[in-house]
Structure formats: C-alpha cells, structure tokens
Length: 414
Image (cartoon, rainbow, N blue to C red):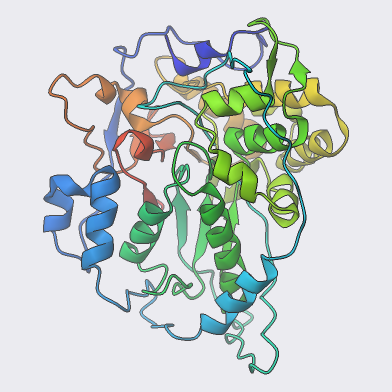
C-alpha cells in the first residue's frame, strides 16, 4: 500500500496516473552526490551523518564562521536583525482550537517510524526593523545589471530544526549564529515545515527570519505550500469539525494527529505564522526549474498557469469551507505520478502547462520512491543526495529525515 492509499475517498480521474501500490517497481534514476567541498570527507562516509546523529555531529564539529558560497563572509552583521525579528514574533494572538477528548483519528498520510505526513511554503518579507537605539546597516544593493546569486532548494524539514541548521551551515548559507550568510543567494524551501519532528514552529520562525535577512542582503528565501501546511492550518482553523470522507467521519485535527502533528506546535501557532503560511505559493518557477511540493499532477486541476494555481489555492484558504479545504489537502497528498513508464509523460504535462525544463519536488521520501526503505539489514536508508529520475526530468528532494535519512539541500542545477 502506498502512502496515498491511506487517504480513501473519491478519486479525481485527472489528477495523474495512479501507479500500482508496489514499491518494488523502481523508477529508473540515479543519486546526485556532489563532491565534498569545504568540509571533511569523513562526514559523508560516517554512519552518524544520518538522521539525528548526523545533524548532531555536524553541529558539534562545524567550525564557527561557516562559508559563504559567493566567497564573501557576512558574519556578525545579522545579530540586530535576528533580535528584531524575534521581537516581532512575539505579536499575534491566535488561540488554536482544543482537541476533542477521546476522538479516534482515522486517516494516515504515509507510514513512518511514528506517524506519517508531507509538504512546505514561500513568501517574500521585507528587512526587519531595527531595535530602538540600534543603528540599522543594510546590505549593499545589487548593481542594476548584476546577475542573480546561486539557487538552492531545501527538501522537507518536518520540524527537524537542528538538522536544518546543521545542513544550512554545512552549505555555507548561514553563519555559526544561525543568521543569513549567503549574500545574494536564492533559496526555495519545498514545503512541509511541521509535523513529526520536534520543533515545527522553530523551523517556521527560522525561515521567516532568513527571508528578512536575505532580502536585506539582496538575495531571497522563499517557500512553497506543502500538504502539511494545509493540514496544520486546517487543524488550527477547523479542529474537530467533521469533513466529508469515505473513510468515515474524520476531521482535520484527527488527520493532523495521525500524520505526526505535535501539540506543542499547535499551542505555539500565532496569527503571524498563520498569515505567512496561508500566503505561500503552491508552485514556483526558477531558472527553468518548476518547483513543486508534491509529485502529483493535481496542480493542473487548479489552473493553467502558475499564477492561476497560486491564486486558486489562496482563494480557497481565504473563502471556502472545510470540505473544499479538505479536498485540496487530499489532492496535494497524492504522490508517485512521475514514477514508472508513465512518469516522463506526467512530468511533460506539467512542464508544457507551467513552463520549465525539469521538475524539482519534495513530498515523497526518496526511500519510499526507490524502495530503499525495505532494506533488510535494519540500517537507516542510505541517501547520498537528491534523486534524479523520470528520464532525468524530475529531481526528488525529500531525503527522508523523518526515517533517519537526510535533510537535503542542493544547489541547482544538478
């Protein structure tokens, strides 16, 4: 049974090819593993690089100061910005709906050691305001004809804040204090900030902080709307309100719990988080890369252009009811559309509609996509890097951090 089969309900015939629920039928593809640079090769060979242990190891051994991918150190300039951002994060007064005692959840996104789930978001923020009495020193603006900085994508984070910080440091995108150190670089998070891991709100706060710091540096940090953003926001907005499901009476709150929802994230969710998450786009296009959270063609059901899709999702979240929201969540939880013989055709359908020459997505953990999760030796899956498949037309970026894989960050193109 594939993860999407855990969401029984009415099928949408135009939402992409539905592959056989057999993870032993593997797509033809290869791993992309960049040459280690600026970091000890032992870190790539060590078993401790997987999951919690790898991030802890990186954090303990990564030298203070980091590395700027453009060769320009930018450390020490961000402290007042981060403090101002943290101060702004204190505002907002959203009170999440309480869980109904004794409610039995009925839906699961995909199997994992504890629960299951998928997807992430993006919005551009201005530079943070300085604290009173602290002078503000903006980064120099780029020259009019200066080319854009390097482009990076980040796979599903799912609340693993320490792992995210460690990998961002390793890539030279933040400094030792967790502030933007990437100059005019561009970063896209592919969705699924919360659920399963220990600190989803901490992840959201970090991305919001980096978005402000990147904008001040002449770069940007953006994110996509993942299915777990839809689920998390739905749990906060609708709680135990029933939704139409052929699996029986269910609710967003019940599904969120089964898919790894963490109560402490819901307790800390504030109005400014909701506003930011609700405005994240569903699709992005950057340097010929069509950026999606989910490996599904369900996006085609919301419009024939990127702007139409993003507007449709935003309008739905703003005005529609619980059943429409639930249907959107279910559609973007579908997966595996780019696997198998029909995979390249599904990719071309999206590229022909929205543009670009290659799809980059998260959502489906590479260990499930390739069948590596079925290893018989009891060891965590070995994920050397992003997975390129579907005749080299698709790049999978969910390294399976929730199953002791890796949190992947990659520079495009690969």
